[in-house]
Image 1 (cartoon, rainbow, N blue to C red):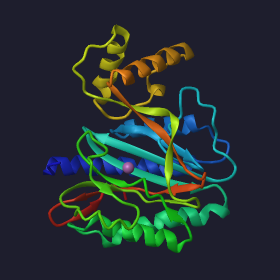
Image 2: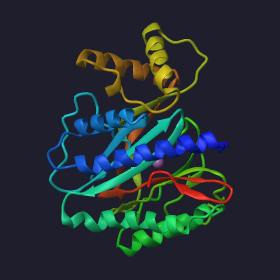
Image 3: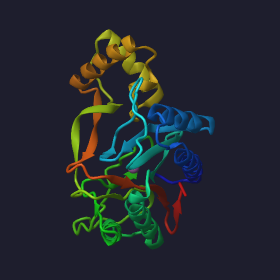
Image 4: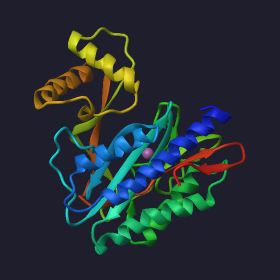
Length: 300
Ligand SMILES: [Co+2]
């Protein structure tokens, strides 16, 4: 991404909105509260502050590591025990900030939450233009292990481009000697995950988050209408049906359209990711801008 002054300004604005939204998340997560209400409240707040959600607010409870957003009429509430992650994104005209926080629901989980928080802090301390991705991974792994937990190896930080949450640049959460690439001028999200499980996630067979793909093929009329409506608002940024649905009938109709669009390769699904051994999972995340000589943490 070219980082002219305008771009940096918008990245900083989205970062500040994301920071405020993450603070709100910390206040909202309490046992018994509806996760639909939490997600909706945060998304509304992001819009009030002049941003748009870069993706639906993810709420991961316990072994759910990522990619769960409340569905239409979701009845799930925050449990009494465990750990909750809220991962949220903001964009301002396509300039994205991605941040996440974890909340321990009882003192037993405080260490698990402290581990990735400290790992992220340590990475921010050593960051400099040109740092190798492997060096970040080494710090994340060492720190998380010093707390007696495992990093999640198949989840990683990532480069960010305009209107693109994952640019293709990977920032490992473990000491990966092959990650020799250097972080030069650009935008990156660093997101250590810790678990008391083995440290791997796997996909469930359902998704609550989708993203459109650019296509040239013709679509069935109802699907075409839906595609155009979502594309007009989101381009290829992730979305959830909760945003587009006002009744259960409509929800079921749209679920079928989603399947059709997936078949036509007009849409990707992001399956829910859970820890393989059902370990509890915690996470923190910040977005950084690396310019020629500076590092700016936009979500701090
Ligand atoms: Co991220």
